[in-house]
Amino acid sequence: KVKNKKNLKAAKKEKKGYIFISNHVHPMDAFLSGSAIFTKRLHYTMLMTNLGLPVVGKLLKFLGGAPIPDKREFLHEFRDQMKISLDKGAWIAVYPESVLEPYCDHIRPFEKGAIRFSLDNDVDILPMVYVFKKPRGIYRLYKRKPVIHLHILEPYKIVKKASKRETLDYNSNVLQKMMHDYLEKENETY
Image 1 (cartoon, rainbow, N blue to C red):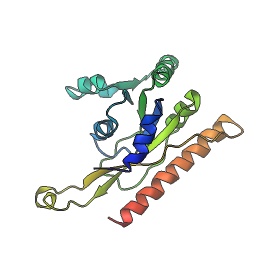
Image 2: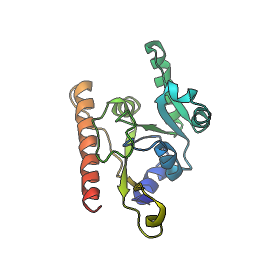
Image 3: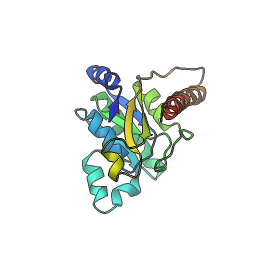
Image 4: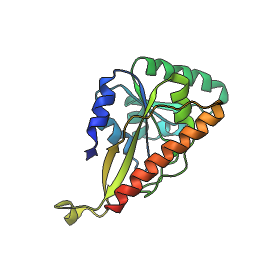
């Protein structure tokens, strides 16, 4: 289930590139967010090792997997390719928590890669939060794990500070708190 679709529709109408972020809580969350966004060209930043996985690796590559280079000398080329994609209106998924923690019920500390991409390419960030709910209706009969809902928050524009480090720290903290507060509010109704 996708909630707050109006935020997604408004972002899609703008015809520009976006960085979209979410909590990394399910092995299939990239596919779930991709199916919600659907009509846009998508890229998912991921570890290089993920593309080497049998079957899944080929599927990830086909669906727009963008492996983060494991060697520093290729990082510049990676950033250039992401800029070209954003300039063409593609959307890039960055998981600021960086590591998958299945069914995690809180927002974990953020890395600053998503903020850096947004700042370097002058694009906005579309935050999304995966919320887990108890199965209801017919799902209660056979589903043991929580049901996943994707909540789309309003686009976030980077606030520039005196230095790049201050900008990265400030925006990372604001986004993390925004997503944390939203998840806490939704968990209260759980």
